[in-house]
Image (cartoon, rainbow, N blue to C red; front, side):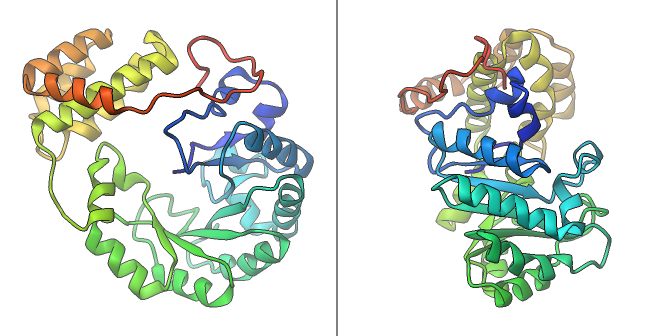
Length: 308
């Protein structure tokens, strides 16, 4: 499992929300915490904090195409600054005892094969594994992932390569693994509102969730979001998830629109359980199965709402 991207600059400046991403719960293992930044010393210091809070891997993001990230010299910008990318990997690898992994895209521009030149250099700098999303930064999430490029990268390096992009089912995962020689696949957007996709890929059985299972999972997610973020922030944060969980023909579109108009998460939960009464018992059972244990937070200035 990999965390959301965490800003090294935010960590360095003690930003409360950024530090909130470093909270590690008992059931979040094995866990990679993903960092982004463009300054080797700050990246190394952030990696030390990642190690101290109990993460299992330090992952460096060299692929994010979003402008607010790339204009700082981080994310996909590093695909065009190989020297800096290698210095970042070297600094982090020297700072921690954890494996250091890197996620990257094929390049900044369409048709680029920058990853094939940079990948081996990152391994020489200390990367223990590479994850390739073979779209360009220009593509963002349009078009398709060119996994022929993934196969080329696998042949160039002697560390595990993880294939990312368009992995949405067991059959697709098997095709990607067979055609690329990758050691594993990474699932990202394919699991948005559909955590059952992960079970399908692992077990090989395409069994869609019932309405009750969908509602139960969403209710638990709503409760956790409120616990982490507080009611006000969670209310806005959750709205995109309603469409992800309830779409695909699972629930009528008017019902999803109705939930979007609600501000109180308690009312959202009430409407959900009214739409699938059988989910009540399932929610109770799932909550009882959640592992309990202490979170590792160090002495971080994190507020009661989690800062996430």
